[in-house]
Image (cartoon, rainbow, N blue to C red; front, side, top):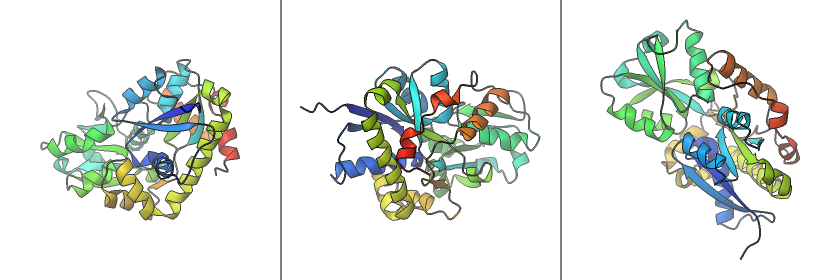
Length: 308
């Protein structure tokens, strides 16, 4: 029986978490082994169940939306942000039944986001506010939260066009477009270039008691990010299985010349998180309050791993 500590990592089946999938694939194929920990991955359908299990100690680490991680830290959960999982990676897609051609056509519609505590909320809110929209119940646009994996079905069945569109991590946007139920309106890069989104957060006791294991894991994720950048076809094949998605959709996302999602800049940038938490507290009151990012973000592992 192995006495090596286990690190159970929660994630969603989204392209943003593909580096974890590549690492998991390398371990499964015995192309990589870890000396200081055993890796176990756990997929979730939505962000709230993932956050709940993380808080309850059922997993030791999570690939999770940065604002949710900040809110958990604010609630005195002892966790540390050790790596950025990706940059960018989301798409605004309009519902074909809503007949939206320009941004003003969103007025009177609902817009779907994956969580109030998300960069998606920030990005769509900023886009609308910059065009003079009032946001909220009874105003120009209302945001509704839907688990990413449920969005394609909601759009498919919304024949009346009540939902104007959505912003979500790939590949669900591309999935809706391929199905003929929606059209790409913006990619998140257009609103905030190379924005952060999901991060790797690890319980503080794991960081303290098994820093070698955390370092091994971080090293592997950075290498997996480089692999995705260099071999989109190979990464898409792994992603199709890990994310339960069609391989051609994953490949189209990874090979998009606009750099829809990137995995070659994984070093945590505190200034980016500060912009995010400032907007989510001061502009839309989604977060409880700002946190001390210097205490939350631990860059030592990313630096040692050579993350850019």
